Length: 112
Image 1 (cartoon, rainbow, N blue to C red):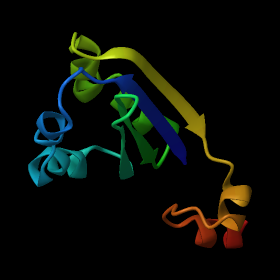
Image 2 (cartoon, one colour):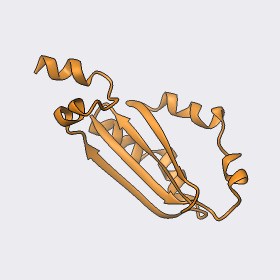
Image 3 (spheres, helix red, strand yellow):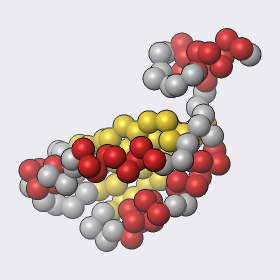
Image 4 (tube, one colour):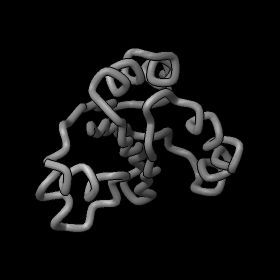
C-alpha cells in the first residue's frame, strides 16, 4: 500500500470562486484511476494551500498516477505554486493500530 501526497499553493481568489471549481463532477474522474483506493481532498483557505492524499494498492499504480495525465495537468497549471508531490510506503502494522482507513489492512495483517 502506497500513499501519494500532493500539495500546492492555490491562486489568490475569493473562497467562493475557488470552491465553485469543486463539485461532484470534479471528483468522479478519480473513481476510474487504476489502483486508487481512495482520495482525501485538502484545502486550507487561510494559507491558500490545497492538495490531496491518495491511497494506492501498490507502488506501480501510484507511480503511474504521478507520471500520468492528471498530475501532468497540475504541473502545467501556472496558477498553482509550490507544488510538492511525495510518494510514501504505508507502515501497515502501526497504521492498523491507529485505525487507519486502509482497505483490507486488518485482513492482510491477520494473514501474515
